[in-house]
Image 1: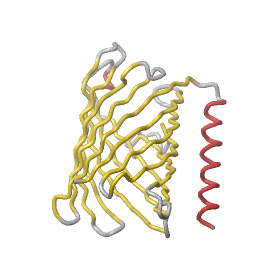
Image 2: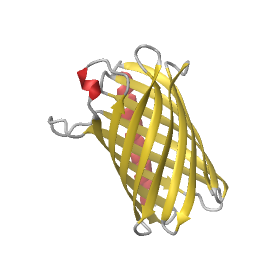
Image 3: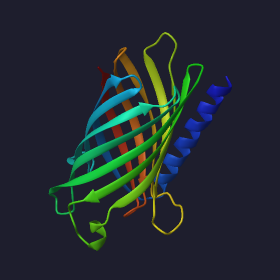
Length: 227
């Protein structure tokens, strides 16, 4: 009961934050994210992942970016793991053409089960480089810290797991102190098709501060499989 009360409080908190962003009168957009995630166990405690995603914007009338990402995850304990990955992105830039972007991720992950709930946290360090250059700053790599907190609930005797999460994005090495340049709030559910495959649907509210204020409402649809 205490956990359920906490979930409800968090849900109300996320709703209020989302509403405050919309009421602020900032630029708004809508997009759809379609993703495919695959995981393969190489040896004990070591998994390989390959993920692909397509994202739209401008009220879902145009493709914003398409990317493929591959990486490795190693479980140090049942609750703690480390991971690294590389993402190659084809992204629509200001001249309406697509250019490559490169990203490298290093992750620390923690999971803590509480009865039928799973509480997880991921701290991600991200390095990004562009091939579309508009000014001198675009020649430099950009670094971010990303923190995601997630709670999901495995409904007993039902192959459904609703979830909520919050993720913040903070520039690293910027020399201006800690600040959040973007955040995401999400609620959705995963449906367990089999023991090794899931489908997911969710809503994401994204608030950007850089390079300009923008709120984006996102419909997220995905399929995940282990083999």
